[in-house]
Image 1 (tube, rainbow, N blue to C red):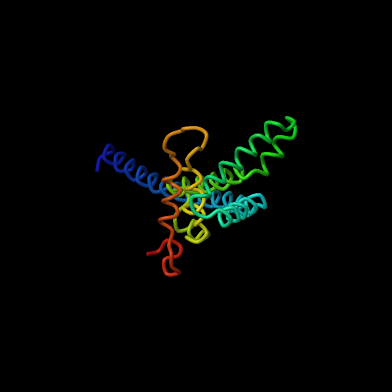
Image 2 (image 1 turned 90 degrees about the vertical axis):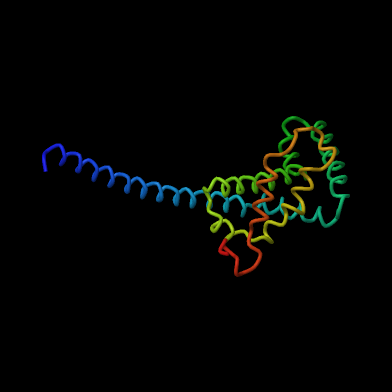
Length: 184
């Protein structure tokens, strides 16, 4: 073997070893990113503000079944908006955080964030569905989708880019104990 062949062979071995190490580093980084994303999501989900928002939305849904939910929501939103406009500027933030619309936005954005993490393969489905079952995600078809698509929203923004992601997060959730954690 001449020197040129030896250098070429050595370079190939080093390149192969570098590729293996890069793959290992990438896998390790992805796992760390998934753990960090999961921790972020869990911390937000367990907050008192989130629990209040989820419970408020379910109470609202039970008190306003069917099509009346969107109509009632629009009336409450309009009333809250008038109160916000009439409030002193330094009292507006405190007021807005008590509104039904704020609570809907909080829950909707939380689940949209989680759906994007799953769709972007940052948070593996197996990990996501280990923490949230289909039952936990029922607020998507029961509350969020009807309110996000309600008539008279006040602004025509076109088709939501978030709703399909939210719906997929719910639709792909395992239903039975056997399917839990994404195994089929």
